[in-house]
Length: 238
Image (cartoon, rainbow, N blue to C red; front, side, top):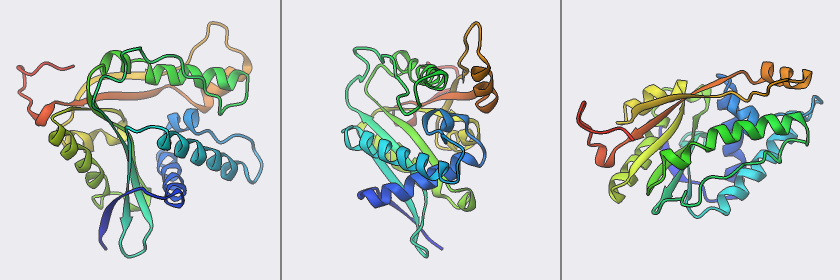
């Protein structure tokens, strides 16, 4: 069975892509998915309805962002999308005016929105210092759990690495733990571990339940220098 790397060009492709994203981030569980694309409600249609909202929101974000480039990996035999990645190409510093607060409006008003908004700020806030230059960012990368270890992740990584070398740009990733070995194999370096861990001084019962649902999430800030040129002890980390 062969794998094909293709740009995402249609709304229908995007719907299938986000279905794959959800499945990938549920196995193994990725807590940030519950902050950014939560399953809200408890009825039989809760997951379907929540996924539909996430699909529409991510599609709108992509269409409204000229830096966004989504790619999919397709199984050539079945035609199924088995993985995807969003690369952002910034020819100029995108954070001249800082990052700003991100309100998680996809959560209903209340403790859930406050919790998710704090998590989003912990995720995006450091970009203003870490990535304040022209660069390429791997914002999202996933492979369906039934199709891992077939090379789909490398296809997605190779596109961004080759584009970065073509444009002579540094590349950044905010990596979940399972993806770190793949990124290391493509020339990325571990720079700093950090956590998404929303906290308040006097948490309510609802906040405590959210902490049980979404425990502290470890991430690794990773970096690849221009052209992948790195010398241990000589090349300065960002």
